[in-house]
Image (cartoon, rainbow, N blue to C red; front, side):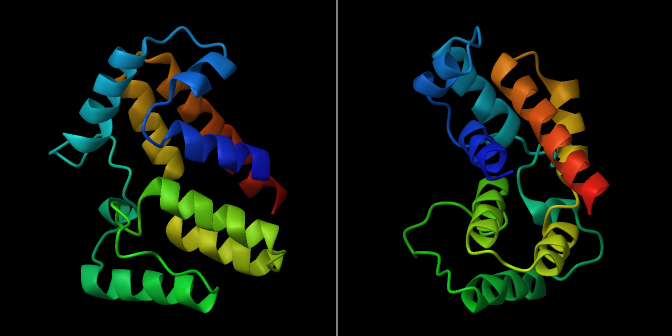
Length: 156
């Protein structure tokens, strides 16, 4: 599962030509960069492909949400640098934290709780990507995201 999570982190980070080539996809880097910006950055309606967990929560106080998430990271010994350019609830940040939890052999019940509390929305996110783009990299990422988390949910 770690390899899939690492690959998902790479896919949903800013586009990388080497990753596209390694996956054997037929994507132009410039077009993929433009699609990344369209899908994940200049997405003002927040109903399409927001890569931020908070956008999928209902009736949650944002301050409490971020305090709880920062405390969770801190309790695991992870400190996010002040120079980090993304919010703590970005999909890539959450995936990297999940990868960290698995690597340090966190008990399964805590990993399951983390996924249920902070990554429950990834299937909806993947579905939105599939409805919003024809870009092979992001369609591949959406498919892998659904496969990975459906497999995880089925097995635990």
